[in-house]
Image (cartoon, helix red, strand yellow):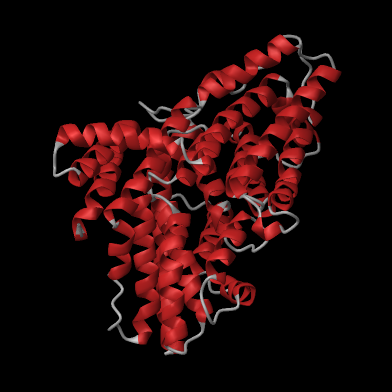
Length: 469
């Protein structure tokens, strides 16, 4: 059955309820219930049963299951680094060298880490958030600002690099399109990926000029008064695992730096192994999971060798940290189920169909960008958007004798923009987790900056469309 515009109802209901009520779990569940009721002849009871089965089915997909396990292991790693004195030791190490002496320098640290660590977006967010969060709290900079900075330098940076899981995924999609050279097309699209570039540059400008717009200004004012979270806020990470230190442990920077280094360096090795010697063919989800496990092993080995913690303490920290991120894992589980529902309802195909073949060439690029943005915002997945839109948009360029790179860039930019602005995006959720802030507060404070970048990108694609027409 073709649901047409009705296919947008479940994700838009989930997004609207999340923004209005701040109850993300119930909002996603409500969207799933509506969607599966639609699929079962508008029967609420049948829809409820089918929705529950769909959530369980997510765990049956190896890639999705690895993301959920990865989330729990991230919590275990954060707790181990905190309780083992690594985070506190790193802060002392940075401050004694006078690298970070104020709030602005703390923001530049978060931005720089996001730019440098381009292997995988979740690792980028984790490292930049874990390292910078205590410094933001110390210098009374809003955690919402941290979430915005790391969210703006994770996926937007990763999408510009071909030698990571993001590049491998999109090169694989391009390889299936006749008449397109995947790597040259991707490289040509980097300079035209206007939203990704705008997001990174706007974040840098925000730090340089101290630009705080709307909700962010209120968050910064609150943080300056010493109030870390807004009234009624519920941080994605349990505060019990933040800032905690086992009694009698001397803080040491290496107990954080070495596990984080292991986490980052193991990612390309994982891609190489899972790709049978071909980095671009590796499994991103498997490599990320292996990387976190390796980092945990390094952290445990360091603490055991230094006799700072025993196995019982490490196991307790592991379980406490993993348990603290169960709420995040639940959000991701529901968001992944929402993505599957959108596919069944044909949400992506409907949004893609909004780009009519009768549009003038000059309007094709901004139309593709806006369609990809709407799709990513609705389904909460940039990768899902890429998978649907690249096979549609790039052949349009080939058939019309137009350069493929601008059309690829329009899809990639739209996917990142919609994902960046969507409250049901896994990247947005993980950024909230890494900054230990309320998820909806992060969405609200980030949205004005995302809209500014999206507007700028749309204008740039309109100009590019006029040039190539």
